[in-house]
Each structure stands twice: as structure tokens, then as C-alpha cells.
Length: 388
Image (tube, rainbow, N blue to C red; front, side, top):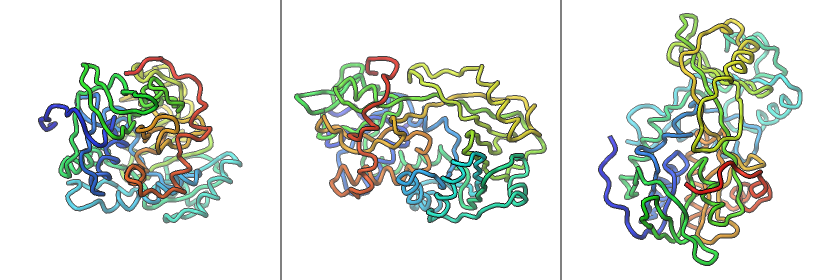
């Protein structure tokens, strides 16, 4: 149950827009570092209703993008041993993750990432691949075993962040959609809600997922983000599925699967540009899912679909995260564009953002995600031209 909340204040030091994992982790990290007077506003009646609550809940730390891989490595210890009283249940079920590539260039990138990672990793022979993931049938160029990766409890994670942030003094206001940022001169000085209330702030953090780019652009920012739709499917329960099987992920034609609710959760990693207000299921994707599943999991190719849904993954043009101060608008800070690795990197993203907001950031790491880089300012026009 969402705690009863006080009325929205007229002013604070830091206002965060978005109650997904990006906004929640940033709010908690700020409060834990001693920042006071932080207000988080979320459009929905509960936090983590969109991208953060509709993803595959996979912890995958072997990533072939160096700066994101660094954030994943920093985040993993948090999932393995969160702070005392953060969550009543474990955040991670370390069933392990099998990562394969069946395209030579992808295999080379994956092998390089495996050589660089600080996480436990083991190369798999074809026979070992079959032993680790007996439901998979694929001729892989390379295969790796990540024994400490696995499945995250997303509800426990996001609820933990919200509860811990509130306990440290963060005011979280749900059911509070933002219509626009308040611009004075070349600075953002606050936000205005759809019902006309204003919250003035020294700094405004855009952590609104698929809506972040729209709000920023309407205020005059040059940062461009693209929300993309992706579908996930859970098959009907099947007695052949072992709930302790590992996560399987192929980075060639991009496909993943893991046990869920007695069946298999599968994703063909489809991607299509979407208006964040109209992210609806496209039933025709079932053909793609079936064809890709038949290639990787032929024994389950005819499994019936029990549940099909979609969520959003938001990207800059170069697919790197967007974290840091806006290059054009003073008072505006971005924690957005986390794409497919937002859950895996959430603890480190929150810490990095909080440190930057408080003037204590690792500037080298932050530079890789700077909103002013070319790849964050050159995306195609997003559907829908108005904020909100």
C-alpha cells in the first residue's frame, strides 16, 4: 500500500521526475550521501509501473560495452548483499547465466568482454554448454558461464529503494504527472504538474524513462532519446522445465530465455520506435518469437503462449546511457536512456548520478555518459511533439 503523502511542496533543492529504478536509486543514493530536501514525483499511482516493472528481471554482468560493464560490475555486490533492512527477501537468485554468440564479430566482442570482466566467468565447450543449459540447441561460436548472475526480484528492489529513500527523508509523490519543465532564461528552475501545481528546485533530475526525452526537448534541450517497444512472452507451464535452469542469452540474433511460472519466459528482442503513451502489445510479434524460439529452443517451439506483454527501452542514438548535466540548460540533470541494462546497473547509476549532483563524481566515468556528446544529441525525432 502506498503511504499517504503530504501535499506537493512549492520548493526543494533537488526534484526528481520519474519513480522507476533510475529515479529511485538516485533519490536513495542522494539521501544516503547526506543530501536533504529531495522530492521525487511519479505520474502513476505507484512507482516502477512501466519499464522498471515490465522487464525480464535478468542480472547479466558480462556486457561488451566498457562503461556500462563497469557500472554492472559495481552494482552486482549490491544485489548479492544489499544494506541491512533494505529488503525482506533476497534481491538476486543466482541461477547463473549462459551467454553465447553465433556470429563471429559478436563472438569476438564477447570474448574480449570476458577477458576484461572482474566477475566470475568460465568458457564453455559445446558439451558443457549442453550440460549447463539442456534446453538450448545452438551451434555457438563462443559460450560463457556466469555462475553468479541470474534473476532479480524487481519488486523487492524498487520497493526497497522507495522505502529506504523515504526513511532517509525523500518525499515521494505518486499520481503526480509532470506537464512541463519551468524555464527561466537558459535554466530549468522547476516543474509544473498537469493540474497546474509548481515545484521550484535548484536542480531538476529527468529520470522519466520513455518520457524524459519529450520533457527535455519541449524545454529546449538538445538531448534526444528514442523509446523502443520490446515484447516478452511466458509459455504455458511445462513439466519439462526445471525452475533452476540458468538464464540463457544469445547476443548474435539476440534472444534470451529463462524459467518463469512453470514455463519459459522468452524474448526475441524485437524493437520498434513507440510513442510512450501508446506502448501497446503488437500480436504480430508472435511469429517472430516463434521463429526465433524454434531456432534456439526447438524442443519448446510449439509451446503455447500464456502471457504476452511489452515494455519500453529508451536509448540515445549511440546506445550509451545519458547521465549528467544538460549542456544547454542550467539546473537540468539527466538519468535516462538506460536501454536494456537499467536494472543490472541501477545501484551504480544511482551512486554516479548522486555523486555528480553533489559535485563528487568520478569525472572519467561520467564523461562516457555525458548528455552533451554527439550520440546523445543526434537521434531521429521521437513520435509525439508535446510534453506529458
